[in-house]
Image (cartoon, rainbow, N blue to C red; front, side, top):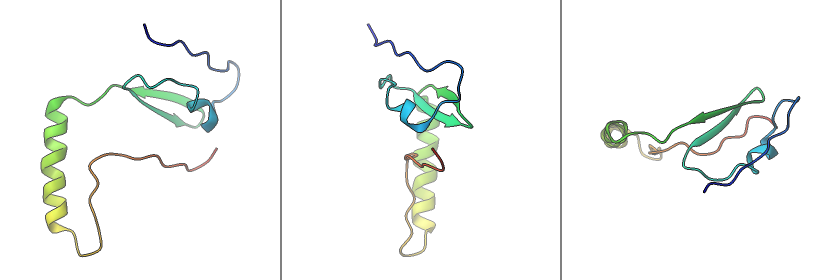
Length: 77
């Protein structure tokens, strides 16, 4: 059974609200206070990402790196 989380009602969500959401294997993003939930990528997508990453890494100038996955970026609270 997965954990149940109650998010605030009647206001835009904030960055600290994301900390109350349990890790369920989905990607959770806040865009202008609205929660967006995306499923984990499928195998076909992951294979395409791996191939593209290899090409980008081979073509990258010294000192630059290509990353295989998104990482947390905070643009505002």
